[in-house]
Amino acid sequence: MKWINTYILLLCLTASSAFAGSTKRYEFEWKDINTREVVRWEGDTAIVNPRSSITELDCSIKINNRDIDAAIESFGIPKSWTTFTYTSEDDLQKKQVSLQKKAARRGIKMSDDMKSYVIDYQWVIDQSSRELRDAAKDIRSIARRKGYRSRRELVGAFASFVQSLEYRLPPNNRIDDNGKEIITIGAIMPIEVLTNQWGDCDSKSMLFATLVRSIDLTEVVFIVKHEHVFAAVDVIPEPEDQTIRYKGDDWVLIELTDAWPIGRVPEEHIECIDQKQFEIVGLH
Image (tube, rainbow, N blue to C red; front, top):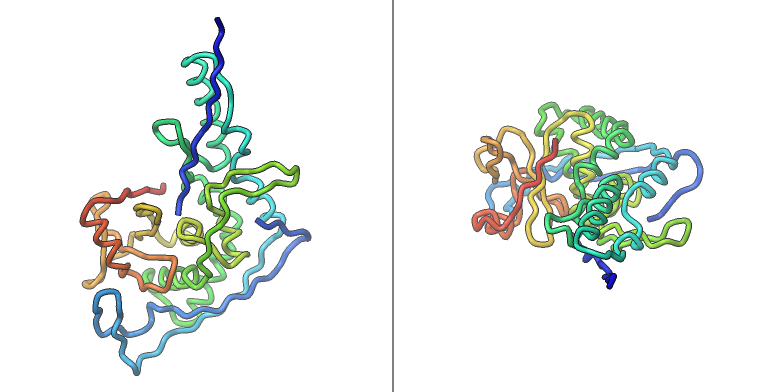
C-alpha cells in the first residue's frame, strides 16, 4: 500500500514596508559614545569624567526606493514551502534537499538536522553591500570631517550610528503583494533597518557588518548566544577591551542594540563566553 506523510518544518526564531517612487533622503543625528572619557567601570556602569564631552554626528543619506523594494522581496520564504507530503524516507530527503536549495537563494538556511531554519547572515550582507556602500561612504565622510582618523575611531562612528537606531523586534513574517505569507524568522534586511530606523539584535548587527564591510573598513564576526547576537571586529585591542579569540587573534567585542563603547559589552555576554555558551559565526 502506498503511504503518504505530511512534513511540517519547525521554525527557529532568532532574537516591511515598501516604498514607491525613486529616491528619498534620510536624516540622522547621533552621539558617539566612544568619544566620552570613561574613568573606570563598575560592573556594567561607566564612571565618566564629568568634564569630558561626547562627539555629535549627523548625516544625510539618500536611498533608492527601488532598492528597498527589491531587498524586501528578495528575503524570506513562502510559508507554503514549509509543509509538503512525501511517500518514503528517500522522497522526504529529496524534498528536503530541494527545499534547502530554494531557501538558500532567499537568505534562509536549514539547520543541520533539516528540521528548522536560521538566517543566512553571509547571504544577507552580500546582498546588501552594493545598496548601502554609498551610505557607508557618507557616514565615513562625516566622521572624517569631525576629525576621525584611525580605523578604530571610524568603526566607533559606525557602531554608535547603528546603536542609535531604535531597538524593536520585527515580525516573524510579512505578507507579499500577492497576499502570501513570507517567513522572515524575525529579521529584516539592512536597508530596511536603515530606512525604518529600527531593528533587533541580528538585524542591527547585519546592518553594521554590511556598512563596515562594504567599504573594507574592518572584518566582523557574530557572536550568537541564546536568543541574542552581538559582534566582534578585527581591530587592535586596547588594554581594557573585552575580546574573543578567533583564528589566532583577539577580536574586539561590540554590542549593537544599545549604546555600548567598542570593547565593552554587558557582563552577561562575558559570562556566556567564559562558560562557552556561544557560537562564532564567521563572515567571509
